[in-house]
Image 1: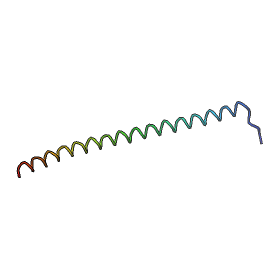
Image 2: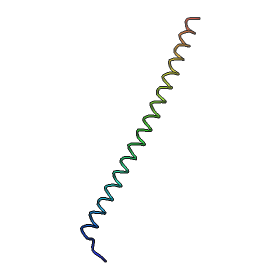
Image 3: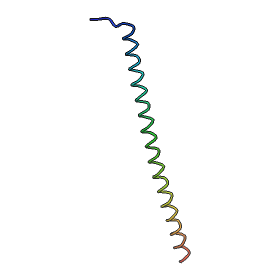
Image 4: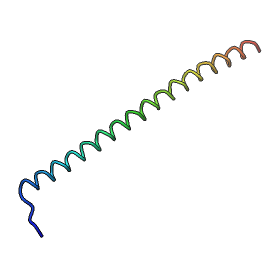
Length: 63
């Protein structure tokens, strides 16, 4: 079996570092997308809660 030269070892190390870096970027991007979706759900829930509270207070006032 052929021995790896120093240049080949450096190239392999660089490729491994680039793959790890790409995975970190992808993980960060997907996490940011999930956070954005969660914030939209929270905003929608808050709006719905506000409307329901107004309806409830109006219903209590009518009684």
